[in-house]
Length: 125
Image (cartoon, rainbow, N blue to C red; front, side, top):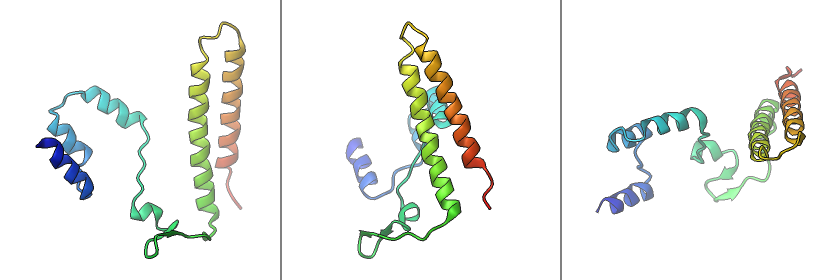
């Protein structure tokens, strides 16, 4: 059964790469996949991306993290970027309002985005 094989692949951590999946579906939805590849965020919770957070020998969170200004700035910029995207979506969802409040919100959101990235892109000492 095809579904059982895919379940086993997932449980064994051997899911095919995106390119292999695209070959399996023979190019169907290619335009959609290209759009998502260009515009979607991709996250992975792998050993490499979590080893600074989790002690994999005890399977417990590490209560103390080593401080790194560079890592902190990168993490803050990532969080801010998500907030910007969320803010854009929130303003877009209000576009059916019939008054100028959406334009004002959009202007304020853009100003906030600009100021935030100015601060986050400022060189550190």
